[in-house]
Amino acid sequence: MIINSLTLQNLRNHTFTEIKLGDKLNVIYGLNGSGKTTILEAISITSISKSFLPVSDATIINFNEQYFSILAKGTNDLLLPYFCGVKYNAGKRKIINNSYGDSLTPKDIIGEIPVIILSPDFKNITFGAPQDRRQFIDTILSQSSKAYMEDLFELKKCLKQRNNMLGKYQKEGVLDKMQFEIWTEMLIKTAAEIMYRRQLFIREFIPFFEQAYNEVSSGIEKVSLKYLPYHFPELNEKDIQNKEYFMEINRKIYDDLKFAELKRGLTLFGPQKDEIAININNSAAKETASQGQHKSLLISLKFAEFEFLKKIRNETPIILFDDIFSELDSSRSNHTLELILNKNAQSIITITENSYIKQIVPQKLNTKYFKVNSGIVEVVE
Amino acid sequence: MIYTSQAIEKVVEYFSSLPSIGRKSAQRLTYHLLKQSPEFVEGFAVSLNELKQYVKYCSKCFNYTETDPCPICSSQKRDNTVICVVEDPNDVMALEKTNGFFGLYHVLHGVLNPLDGISYEDIKIKELIARLSGIEEIILALNPSIEGEVTSQYIAKIIKPLDIKVTKIASGVPVGSSLEFSDELTLTRALEGRVVL
Image (cartoon, rainbow over all chains, first blue to last red; front, side, top):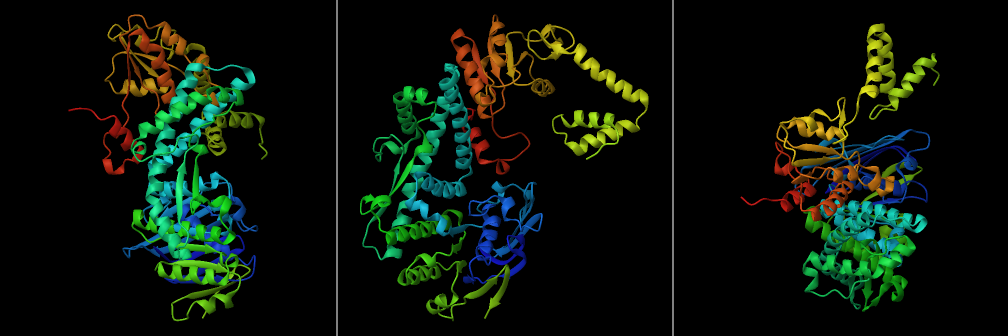
């Protein structure tokens, strides 16, 4: 997919901006707070229906206005035209249209414009809590399977209901035992479904990750991913072939934790406690990796996501890198940029300093430069 | 907003408290009523009064009725060995329209939902168990939400030991639509519920 033109209205400090993007590398530069990231956010909204930053839709409307609207026009890998428009009026439902229909829901457009987003905020994938890693794989999996998305939704509901019953028992000492058992059975079934898919996904994803890490760091270290469901014994080849195995183990774990759950008034098992370990030379990256290795890991995860999405969706994703070069030293930046160019995809990167990128990108590569100043974008020749 | 009459405001309040009616629709309805003849409004008010006065629960199936037991429960033509369990009186109407079910009904008036504080005592499960003598089959026709599913299993767990057949309606591809327009979850369910030919 390539976005040819992007129009944004009343998004943060952009009152009206129209950009014609290039097919290859696009560099957006300007001072802090000038509105560079907003352009990436706009693409994110037309792709995954929301900003990649943890903000609500209402807060990104220009503060003098009541609404924002975005229109992205592009061409997909089959050279067919595609457009997606999103309009949001404060307090109302988002109005989403694309080439295939009007007044769509976010679910309908997710994945139509596949994007790979990297921003300094995403450091937590390798650094932070297991939740950040779960979110990372859930985002990819949801784009590849709607059934998985529904299962996640069901899990959330199950947990809420079950926790409510447990909480009530803790406070008031009452529990409808029979109903509780049925909710438990429901949770075990949904949990098995999600865990089964997660481990399948991770096994599929590992080769992509290994290769990407090799490219990013010229491969001295060996990296791997490991799926560690909470309280499970070591997974081996034979067991993970069927969902029944996951149901069986979950049932056993529930038996062990039954009383602890009643005492704490909380569900203590399930995929909401899964960990996905990132290992480097067979030890946990979270604890042993250096700052530089963390950065390489993060970039490789994103490049692996690129290749994976490209394969399953049969459409080249767009690369959006927000201000990551400020975090990398010059040789790493050089190398990352080279890798981006090798992907032969449309990429849009933001940077505070222009002169630096001009050094490393030869002019003949059709790179397009945009200078942003207080929400006004101009093309720089 | 300032209304020029308290009477108007009151009616608007009442209308907008109804399901799927917002303030704007409530206003439109109220002004529409104002334009009608006094006889019409009188008739409307009387019929509303009668609704609460005459309509009550059937003591057997807990559907709404004016006569107790309701026409379905007292009918000689119905098969009184089969009970179809539904969530809501609306569902009885939907099933009756099919003209394909001739058993009796039982309306639960809700499903188990711990979050909303709806438990075993709040819905008509006890009443269902009380009328099981002489019944050969219970058909569970609850909505395919998680709560509906849990309620179905709950009832099945109670009734199965009594040696009564418990069945659940199938879920899958709607008639008149085609496979390609069905979502993944519906298709998965349809595959699970496939039948041998």
